[in-house]
Length: 198
Image (cartoon, rainbow, N blue to C red; front, side, top):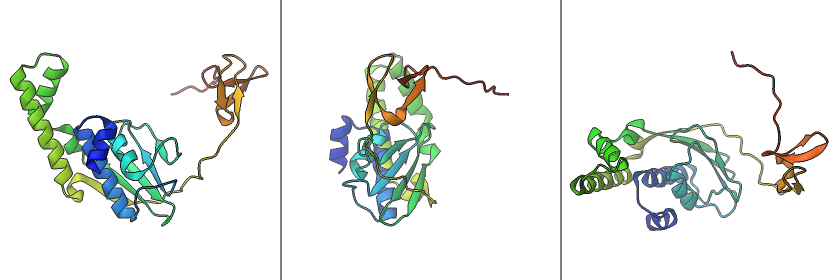
């Protein structure tokens, strides 16, 4: 499966290893296999590399409606099973994400295009070691895992598309608004709010 994940993502990186490990833990806890339809649901709280591994491993995708993106910027993932009605929340150990001081400094140099060839090579060796460590790490050291109550959302539904009265593009009916007597898409909608944050 690792090879399929790498092929789908396009390269090997620590983030991909994190998603691979998370998906394996989730499927094991839920006693599930890769979803053909919507048997497994995933809520991912970031849009990093690991989400690609989760899609390949679990079969949860945006297109099927069983992958939900909740943008908190956390390496936290919640998975639910329609079959068992169980859910698990996986929070990756933050220390894994920080890396050593050495790799952070090398990464900074590489991003600033200031790294020598020797430093680039050292960085790749350290990075590969992190990937290997993640893949071999015991689950309890890698992340905290806890069963949670999870209201499995209804299955994905199909809706008619309506033409926006401003830009002319079509949008799914529940994502349109009425404005000045016209149906408009969210891009054209002029949100009116009078709330003040204090």
